Image (cartoon, rainbow, N blue to C red; front, side, top):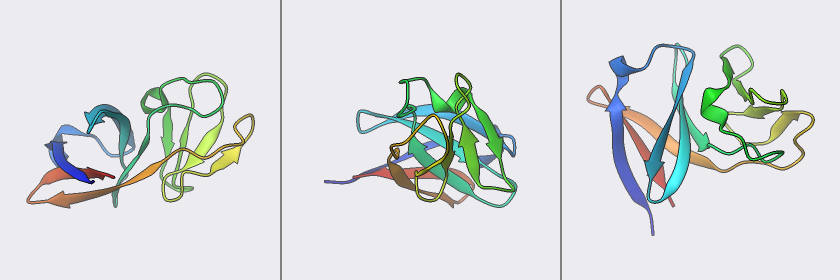
Length: 105
């Protein structure tokens, strides 16, 4: 079963930033780049740290874990740099009427 939730207004997030939200009991890192919004699981698969505290790279469409530097694709959740070797979940995120909506299955 899927659940869709409005997490915030688009203007509440600066471009190239990430914030943590709870959606359907899941910790989700919502990321805003200058051109899009993304949602991925908020826990690094390497060492269980919050990804929403990491650095967004809009050019490579990745989010870097602040603790050990693993990076994850915002589109696939796949790790792009060690030490992570396992993917994180990816969720649907979109902007509707100026608000960011996230759907978790």
